[in-house]
Length: 280
Image (cartoon, rainbow, N blue to C red; front, side, top):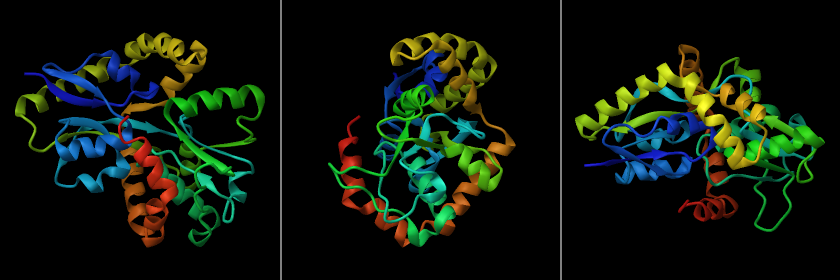
């Protein structure tokens, strides 16, 4: 019997996917935010789930080793593009969020709050309106960054802020975007096969990056050296420093993720985005 495992269809996960699925399993492509609901409902047994969604999965999943997606000082694929420097970004300027993320949107909220105060968090731009800044993740962010590096602007935005770099500036720690987890009621063989698969990945990561780079470059129409640079930036076998960064983020969200934050995420400008992406 084959068992479904969520696989984020972004370049950062390509080395994992290049290994092929764990024995007795198959991959189901699932945007980061959607993997939370997929785990809740039992549509998949395991996933590299956004750290920002772990609270919603308490009692449902548990970590599998120390594997995931993390970055230190730069991530290149979780970016805030804006019409002014990040330290000048506050209400009444407006932001547009991605509907695919659970960690990155919370990270942006914290960083904006640190910079100019949580009472000055910018409102979300409505549909069809021009935003002063936009949060992008995954392949779209990677492609926008390449254009920005070549031209000094993209889509009218002259400034780009790497969210991992900004987090490191405040806390001197890496940021963990996702962790591999498995449902607590998963069959024992699924759990064992997943553990063996991740152990094989750790041994072969360098070769899997080399194998993935040309395929990602062709799919995204990006230079091979740029893609290789990116794939090597991502940390997939996490260190104690990464784990400290994850704990710091969770503590900061407990501290600052107040009712004001819930209003931000409950606004029509955000919920309409998440509905749009709910079937990806």
